[in-house]
Length: 326
Image (tube, rainbow, N blue to C red; front, side, top):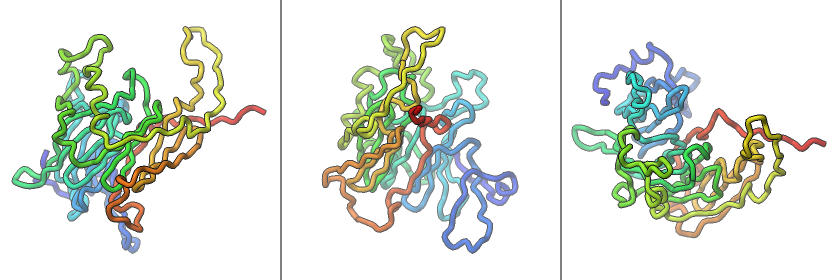
């Protein structure tokens, strides 16, 4: 949707928004928030110092809701909106308008975007087109899974870290962090270019496990990676596991549901050759990447060329750390 008739003054009077700009030299004057999203913002990033791209999620189910492209020259003015959820659709199963699921990071280089999706189990390529009468618009190019999840209902904590031209993606159920160059993925042969409501692809489902992807498609993103690192489980400091007492309706389920997860990183940081994983037991591990990943133009500003941020993929569930009973 285009915003040809957007009135920023009217929007300010209507309600408070959920993006607040911070200016270094505001001198105490009030800064108006940006009105546009109706849900909580999950991820955002600066595009070429011209735009801000932000993605929000719906309340309740937490599905992707909207992606909005904002102008930085006219702060607070939305230029383009991509609706990802239809609140007015009477059929609940048809409300999702995109295959995007749980986005936990956006990386940007030039006009190309790379999103971490499905809690870090899938990457999504998108492109910003800002030339011609129809620009600027953001178009999704396709999806590529990493195959970290064996079942759909596992692994609900993923993260993306960005540094210069690269992103790293990881999730809680596996110690592997996959590293991708942001640019150059839009035309890759491994992208699955189907998009829309997943129920539209029922005929394509692999009925052996209920997935819409073949085994090759489930791991197609791995061939697109520039590299990977494998962290030690729990940062090499595995916590003592507590066995829980079986309940009345417990038929041999997991006996180690103690809040620590499976030992993969639950948060990531990346800066040039340095990649750091944070784990549910409080451990931190730093690994050093090859010279290939060194920054092209080192800067004293830690946020330079890494201007993005996102919420954890499971922000309402934080692992509870418990001390041993003495």
